[in-house]
Length: 123
Image 1 (cartoon, rainbow, N blue to C red):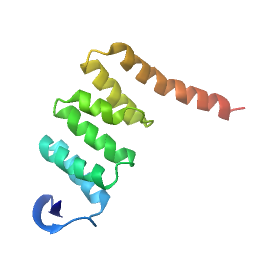
Image 2 (cartoon, rainbow, N blue to C red):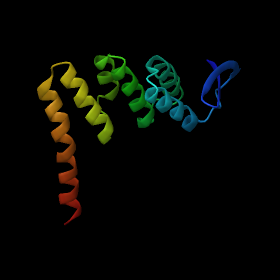
Image 3 (cartoon, helix red, strand yellow):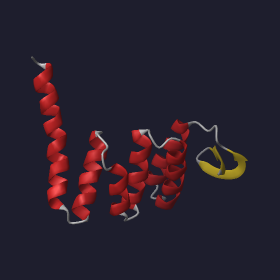
Image 4 (tube, rainbow, N blue to C red):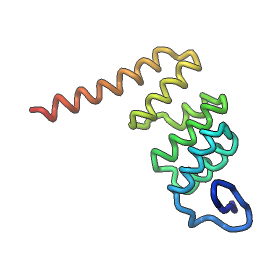
């Protein structure tokens, strides 16, 4: 894919394989803030294609899908992620899909993990 990010605008003439992930993340957040959801999806998909193992990249793509009204796609991306923000968004997706028990498990599991870690670390 070809793009160049200049002062908040996407321009097409150059290859951007070497574009800093942080800059792309900023552009996704900016697009989400400006309610440019399809643009956010496009950039986040490229970001995940470049580095799909990074949890923040996956979270941004899931957030874009969620705001686009596609909670099932967001849910698939977030499944198995451990970060609090990912689990909270996953719970929101479950609620929108009328999967209330799964949403409760995600929310309670997040605090339960913290309690277990705190209990073991204090001994």
